[in-house]
Image (cartoon, rainbow, N blue to C red; front, top):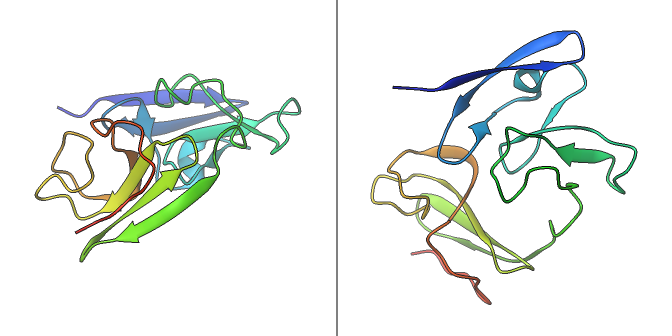
Length: 131
């Protein structure tokens, strides 16, 4: 069963689907008027309090909720496999996207993802490699 959230942002309603933790987006239109689908695949809304001008909302992954996009979103490495890619954030979190039929993305599923998903099963890392 697919969970669906209807999110009110301004005067617009947007729908996004549940995928792992939080509700995922693939395009800005899914985030409502003035919203943006960030590279992490979660919706962000404009925020004058953030240096980047964007803040994750209540429907993002728990680790991202109410955090400015610029807070910790610096990447220190990237690795590509045959059909997937992983990026290492400077805080040690690993985010991957692409084919996932053998669990390559590390998110506990076997679902392909066009947007980065958090490799929640991976402890804080210093290097990243993809086979």
